[in-house]
Picture 1 (cartoon, rainbow, N blue to C red):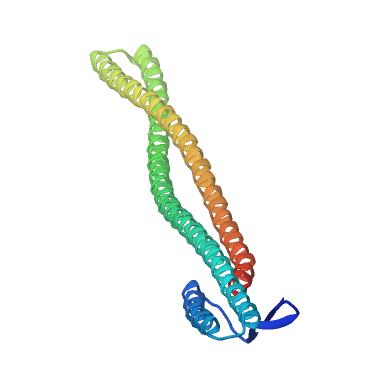
Picture 2: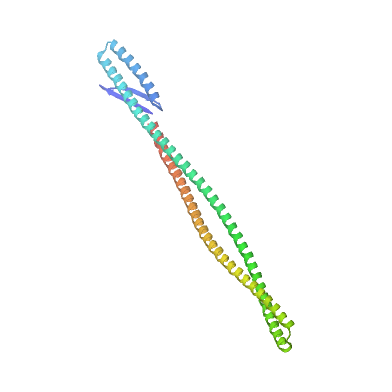
Amino acid sequence: MLSISIYVFGNAVDLRNERHHVPTEMGVGGLCSKVKRGVRRDIKRYRGEGDCSENRVRVFAARAKLKFMEDLLGESRGCCETTSRKNTELEDLIRASNGAAEEAKSQARELEILSSLQREKKSVELERRLNMLEDLWKKRQKEFALLLEARKKSENQRNLKKREQCMRKEMCGCGGDSHENRVRVLRNELTVMQEKLESIENDLKAARLKESDIMAKLKSAEEQLEQREKLLEEATTRKSELEGKLKTSDENLLQKQILFCPKLCQATAS
């Protein structure tokens, strides 16, 4: 609601006394052009009339009205330019925020893929470790069986020695070639048994060396698995931080939009 009057030589001239909303520069420009044409017609008409004093007042009032509309047009243009600039800044801010949001989403997707790969690698590593432990258990069982067999052979060897001693005693008491042949055969059997026992002991030593190698590999695999778990935890933490930053950016953008909209509406209304 605008009501503007100019007093010229004691006479009040109403420039505009009606409701008028100026939404854009084009509306004000059209209104000013219309007022200019009307003012020019009034000036020509006043000049053609007889009373110079009253005509001067009317001409001055018309010129003042024209100047007011020109000032209003300039102010409206400045307001429109400010509004356009602020709209451009807001659009740039929105584009930058959208770009940051897309980048954060892309990084979140990459982190999810990395986490999935890490979980898959961890599962494969655990399965491999379980298979190694199963193989180690089987080898231990075989070693235990070999140890039992070696003990049995050792007992048999002791029994053979006892039998040999008994036979020697019998030979000392009885004599004869048949007893010597029997002792010779028993000695040969004892030699064979000793060779087999040495072979079993060598196999046991080799199995123990393999066991030490396997345990070292298992320890190295555990250390690598721990390092991968740490990397996975760091990736998860980074993902949470990016999500927090994205949420904060969205909230800041929303607050800026909320604060900017009333100012924009106020500037447009002015």
